[in-house]
Image (cartoon, rainbow, N blue to C red; front, side, top):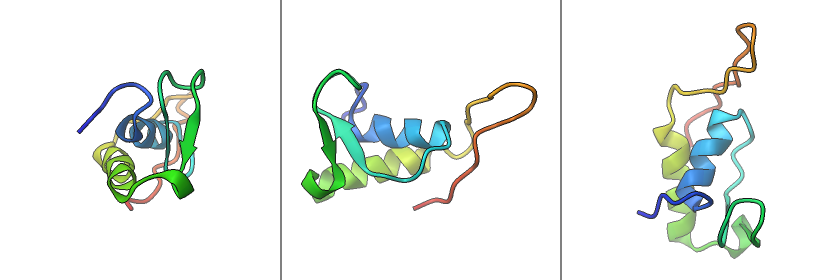
Length: 76
């Protein structure tokens, strides 16, 4: 499984870390500076990799300071 920065796996992991909603997507190259591919244009395998990144991040959450952490979110 490709875990490069911007990959489906990476984006799933990062979305959960930052408390963002479960929204499958990835970037063709560098995150935010290359074209974004959204769920409607992703293959079933790419969506599976996003979900795997999301589910692999069970406990690590962004600490926003003063004990405020990103919400847990649900496993998908």
